[in-house]
Image (cartoon, rainbow, N blue to C red; front, side):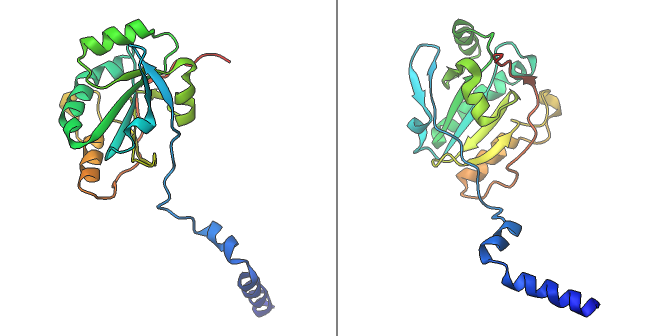
Length: 197
């Protein structure tokens, strides 16, 4: 009886279509793609993700003006931008919080010497498409808009307690033409304040 059951199971496996077998062995290297978008900065200038497609990497950072966790990263974000801008890495800040105005974003960016554009995501449309949840939260894309890294900037909001510089490590690996060794981490911070439907 056992031999008969084993034979039936073996026969069933042999006649399975090859395409069905792929469902049991998905390609682990397949990268999720982000959508292109166009948003305006605090000066009213439009920026599209596709404007940066020739960069070695595009860093999309969801940030806030009022979130204390995001604000703890202001100096670090500005410094990372300064350290990598000459290495053909593009940076885009996105503010998706419904209560934070364009004027507030402009003052916040100026006060913190952000050299990168900060765009206003009205109605949190882009945050929804990217499934961004908190500030700060980072996505690193290649020129095909494939997501190479998604998560935190580093592992502690307190500078003295940082042990892992996730974003910097990711960018260094990309610049060295290496595969990103840790493509997903858990972002932490304040929830993005979305418009109510």
